[in-house]
Image 1 (tube, helix red, strand yellow):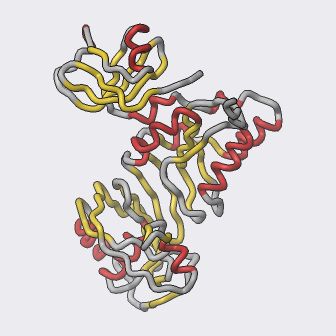
Image 2: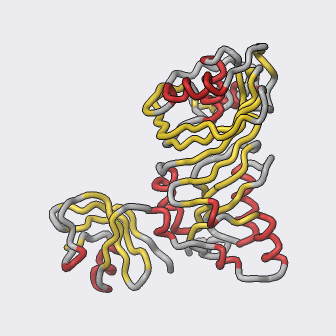
Image 3: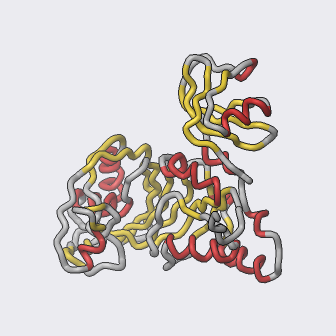
Length: 304
C-alpha cells in the first residue's frame, strides 16, 4: 500500500520578501507549515543578513526551480569602507583595516573592471562545497578555506549613492553564482581602502520582482484569520520566463503526460528547436525539447 504524503498538494510560486536575520531554510519551513504543503523549495539562497526576493516553489513548481535559479538577479547593497571582515559582511571579525577612503571619481572609474565576465573568488563563508563539506562549515570550525576563482557575469554595476565618506550604495545586475559580498571585498582591495557589505537587498530573481513580493507577516495574519493562502500563489509556469510556450490538444496533453513525444502543429509549430513548455486548457503539461517539429518531454507535471 502506497504511503500517503503528508500535507496538501499545493502548486505554484510564492514571492516572499524575506525578513532580516532569517535563513532561507527557515523561511521555507514556516511557509510549508502555514500552508500545510507536501513539497516546498526555494530558488536561490539569501543570507540571513539580506532581505528581499526569495521565490518559494510549491508542489509541481519545484520542477521549474532550475530556470528561476539560472535567471538574472538584481541586488542593492551598502558597502562600508575602511575594514575587511572574515565573512565579507558585518557579521564577521575584522581582518584588515585602512584609513584611506575613495572619492566618487575613484569608485566610478573602478566599476568597469567589475562588469562583464570576471573571475571571482567566493567568500570563505559561502555554500561552496570543498571535499564534500560546505565552505562556511569548515570556516566556522576554524579551517582556512582556499576557494578557487571562478567566472561570473555581472551585467551592470552602478553607484547609487554616497551617504558619507565611509559608505556607498550600489546596484548590481548579475548572473548565477555571483557573490555581492565578494564584489564589495574586491572593490575595497582595488581601491586600497578595504570594504565589506553592511546592507543587502535582492530586488529581482528572474521573472520575480518586488512588485509581486509578499511580507511573511501578511501571510501569517491571513493564516491566523483562516483565509485561503493559495491566493498568494502565482502559476507554475511563471518561472519559465522567455521559454517558448506551445498550446496542445487534450489528446497531445495525455501523450505528453505519459512521456510520449508529440508533433507541434498549427500556429504554434516552431521554426527552430530548443526548450519549450506545453500548455493545455490553461495548465502546464510538460517541459521538453523541440526537435524536427516534435516536442520531446523531459519533465511532466501532475496536478492530481
